[in-house]
Image 1 (tube, helix red, strand yellow):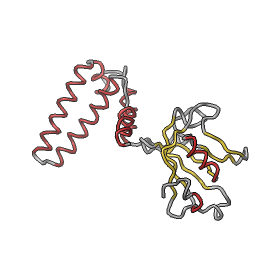
Image 2 (image 1 turned 45 degrees about the vertical axis):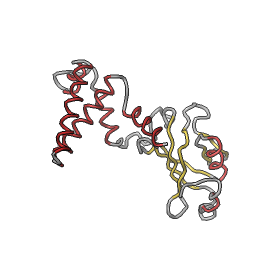
Image 3 (image 1 turned 60 degrees about the vertical axis):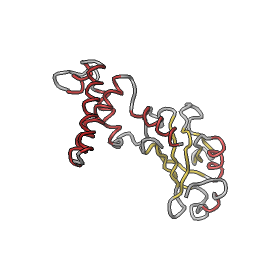
Image 4 (image 1 turned 120 degrees about the vertical axis):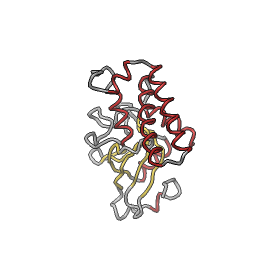
Length: 202
């Protein structure tokens, strides 16, 4: 159930002593960012301000993530589980979520696959070209990178036209990889593309 001002009272507040556990998820990537607790007032404040707000058990007050660091979590939606006793918040972070400076409080957890690949590709810029195909591709410049994207795009189109499912899957993987290289070669990332898609969805 998506939570709004009209259905807050349907949540299992009595069962959970007035505080519901809340998992925050990056709305574009699906990555889990942090875990906290929400009260009725925290939900109302989040919905009103658009900035994700929790209830701090240690401070015994409402706490807006980013109130001191400016690394706000821009609220996209709040959802309950099937028992109405736990919440999922989808948000877009303005910066690192973790107080240690990490993107997520679960920094050791694997990133979503495409984001892991995107980060790996970014790390190859300036690496030894003899040991990394990605590094060698970067070293050949934008025109060569763009050419590879075009070549792989043609391969995908041909596989699709012939209804060769295995070839289509393989060539699509190659295209996605080279597209990520092209983005990084132009100082962009997968997140930039996802933000455009999110705006179009809205």
